[in-house]
Every structure is written in C-alpha cells, then in structure tokens.
Figure 1 (cartoon, rainbow, N blue to C red):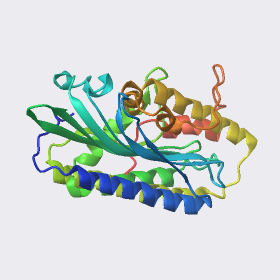
Figure 2: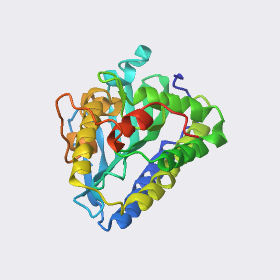
Figure 3: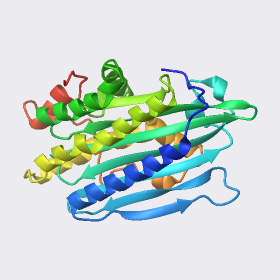
Figure 4: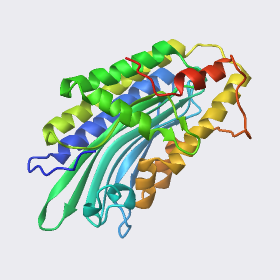
Length: 311
C-alpha cells in the first residue's frame, strides 16, 4: 500500500470529464449489445444532508442479454472521511474529502456469460491550512459461473496490457492484490478469477497516476466485450441457471460483508439505491451444498476459483 500524495498541479475537472465520458461510452456500447438502452437517473443531494454533491446512475434491468446492469458515476464531498477510508491511514481521520468515480457491475442472464465489475476513482482528503492529499483506486474483476480458459486468459491479458506502460511490476502486484481482496474469508473461497485491483495509488504523481487509471478504465470494454460476444448464444439449462443463482449468492455475501466501496458509500451517507445497484436480481442459497465430482460446476471450484497465473 502506498501513501496518499501532495501535488499542487492536480486537476479534478479533468478527472470528472474523463469519468462522465467513460460512463457514457460504456453505457452506449453495452446498451447497443443488449438491444436495450440504459435508463438514466440523475440525482443530487439536498441541502443540509451529511453528504454533498450528486451523480448519475445508468441502469438496465430485464434486458435481452443483461438481467441487470448498473453503471454509476458519483461526485460527492463530506466533512469527515468514513472509517472504511481512514482505517489504514488513521492520520487522515477527520479530514474532509471529495470522492468521484465510476463503478459498474453487469449480470448477464446466460450462466455461460460471466458477471463483471469495474471501478475507477479518485479520492481527495482536505484539511484547512494544509495541501490536499489525493489517491487513485480501482480495477476490474471477472466472476464466471462456468469456466472457460480462453476467457480468463483474455481478460487478464487486457489487464496486463493496460498497466504495462506504467511499469511491468504493476500487473503482478495488482493481480495479487485483486486475488487477496476478492476472497471470501468466511468461506475460504475466491469470488471469481480476479483481474486487477489497486488503491491508495499516487506515487508517480497526479498526471501519471491519472493516466494509469484512464488506461484501466479504457481497457474495460476490450476485456469484457469479446467474452460476451463469444458466449452470448451458448445454450443453457434451468439447472445451470440455478447454479448461477447459487454462485450469485457468494457475490452478495462479498459485497455486503467485505466490499470497501459498499462500506464507504453506506458509512458516508451515500445514496443506497446507487450503492446497491451491484446486487444481482436473483440469487439463492443452499444448505451445505457441493457440486458432484467431475461436473462443470465442480471444475469451476477446482480450476477457476483458485488464484492462478493466467498470462
């Protein structure tokens, strides 16, 4: 983990412009793929609320391909960092903050098409009489229900290629960070096949840190679109849909119990509908269930839900 950084030349307006453009581009592309346009929900916090600012949620439900998908942009400010943001840096507790980012989760209907998550963000901590501190965070990760080696390798190659211009050491570092982060500790189980995850990133200075974040954001469609184009017409059974629902239960568990973004949003008084748009529309739980040996469901656990070198 790196320390947040001072930089007198930071340009928050450039970040805001990039993020709103990224949200629009992804919504347009995935809406066209689905055949259903994303609905737009622009929101603003009222005067006197604990959190100031607003954002835009782009949401698609009951589409031709996506059962549910949300792409959120938020630009909010508060008087004190929530505990989830200052837990690892107690010296920043009590500072004011501004946080802006794009976060998305897409849940396809077809269980052979994976769920995907992506987030890119900037957080600035402020204190009267001192220079602001900033750090970038984000990443993307893939959660398949039926494992395909070529999908996993493609996704990780795009993640690596997005980071390589900024240092060959970043992909292995952020890949490991992702594996460690998206781990359900109470089940000793990975959420999916990972990808990349980074937080508190500022060591190269504002411009280069911002450029790296943009490269990750710009890599998202390159990473995900070829996979769903390849798998969209794969036949599936109700039993496979049921297994998808069971695995989605793990997604819910992670997001509610461990996810720092969810905790940050709720602790800071964020907009609940936008924070919880990542939840799948259908999920289920079974008591002490295990897949039969030799099945594709069992292979997901043995071959994919384990940290692996994919590239």
